[in-house]
Length: 436
Ligand SMILES: *Cc1c(COP(=O)(O)O)cnc(C)c1O
Image (tube, rainbow, N blue to C red; front, side, top):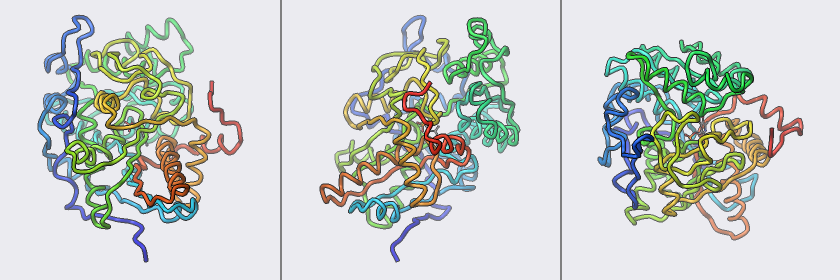
């Protein structure tokens, strides 16, 4: 029998995170203070983040030890399985070998707890009592609600209002894990009030919710802010994904020719690909790495590489990244996790340096790929993850034409159990490619 599921033992959970910063061909441009245009220092960030995370944000150490308490919690679902997609390969009649790393086995159903747990831990160690954050579709909010409850912290989640109304079950999950969930824009913050005074019916956006969460953290001493993607320390924490995958592929004597991940802010893509990019940047391996984004919010393929705010109102430092502009409100596509206007500065710089590629797809073709996957492999993918599936299928079909037997690896970043209404919309035939 051919191997389908490649699993590792608990003691093979990585002991270190891989930091790509010292290996980058072009050093990262520093975050700037928007008022002075000078690089910001640790002091500027300390009202929002614990010192350990601020250090990680700028660290030049290639490997950073994972605390035992964090590994203990990782062991609730890690190491996550790597699958060989035999059935998808057969359905496509491709000579390519397709592998996927499945991060939907975490309690929150995505890769996001990999960083949520680390962030909650360092905040708890520093004596912080509450974390404030934003969430779009609810994936990040539920991951942080899970992590904070495991470390005995309180959690306030500003949830984009339209998702709060349309995705009640993610909200319920956050409540179940003890978090306070506030529809954003709200009247709890000046940022929220400012938006509401201009547009009382505002459906909200991730950028607005970030503004609210940052203001909450900055104005309460016992509270810090937590971000689920984009920042360097988030990319760092996610590298457990790629390190495990390398071990798993080595067990079956494979190394990928092509690595694919969906990109919202870049963290699941970074987590899978960076440990392999380490080899590429060292010149020991050649691998094609592809970031997949929605045509509705194509930061890499349609944005500009420049300094921009991370939020809508303009409270964050300026980050050099591919951006649609901080005031861009993307169409309400079903892959809520991919609707962020910017991208990780690291992922952006790697794209500018042509170390990685990017491609954008529209949502109906993405859902079609998601259904093909569910009907062959069984697992229902999150709409975000289905972007990576679409790209993997396209690559496999190219191999069918050319006869190449490539090894294709993609990140199945989460399951779609909370996205059934999106699948219903797809099957109803009413899904639009340039929606509202
Ligand atoms: C949040 C999310 C994404 C997008 O965020 P990244 O930081 O780019 O990974 C992708 N897939 C799932 C399942 C998510 O929850």
